[in-house]
Image (cartoon, rainbow, N blue to C red):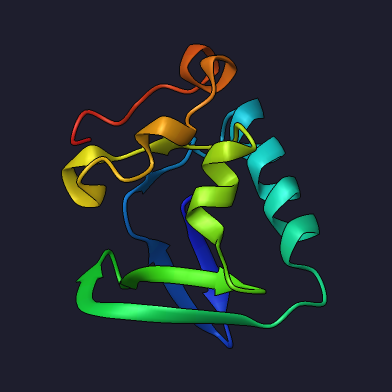
Length: 105
């Protein structure tokens, strides 16, 4: 899951390559994200870019980078093209085996 909705605004998590929702990994990632964010305040630092009608940025909950947390939890991969590799060390071997990395990453 690489997109969240914050106060009605869709935000693409910069540098995060999440599985498609049509896959079991995607559904698990969506559930994890909902549980992780439920009842918490999310803040985002948008970079001014848009992709497919979504703003792009890094979002935080309780000071924690949500993209980093989802990758460390095994629900997404680093998209080096956009992250510069900042999340690569957080990828789990299980996620690398289960999630198909997007070709543009």
